[in-house]
Image (cartoon, helix red, strand yellow):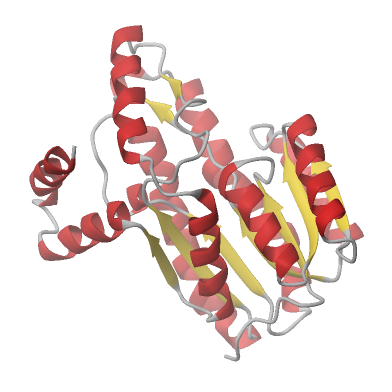
Length: 276
């Protein structure tokens, strides 16, 4: 498959109001892509769109405000995007949330909230946009999993479940879409310095002191600038890479999972302890 061409194409990016999504929007604008940006934070999203319009006047930008935790709103957004942007050649399912806590510290509603945003929304938006991508041979689909879609540490059951699901969904789609000349990339970021740690929720069974320790641990690991992550993702899209690992916090766990499929948990604990 030839390299993906950004210039003149239209890219849909979810979770575009901050973090990796915001950085992706700027990176795509630099490369000449028109943009459709989706997020639930209307004010932040408007700010991102205004900044890009001011800096890159030729780029056409549309914004969609939707809460991907709402299954009906997600379906409406998918239908709207497919209908109003039939020229789309790139879909990046980037939006995601974290819910800290062991499985027994989460309610089913809390667990479901994570799965709805991190996985169900990916499936729903892909469902509605897939015919559009297929109508443009050479288009591309990118889904953000996580390093926790490769390894599964304790205290992240909901997040790991959702990101392993994204990984499996994306890898199966890659084979299915190859005959249609649609590229597929699964992204596994490590510790990216986004708002995901400060805005992370914790299960109702998690004490405030335990949650505070969790946020402190995350702050020590989340050090990679979102712009660095976005550059790696867009390079992966351009080269049609099936998988993109970002940062040592992704590459080391991935390597250990390969070397010790059932015993990498202990090894990872030692590696992160040493780094801290």
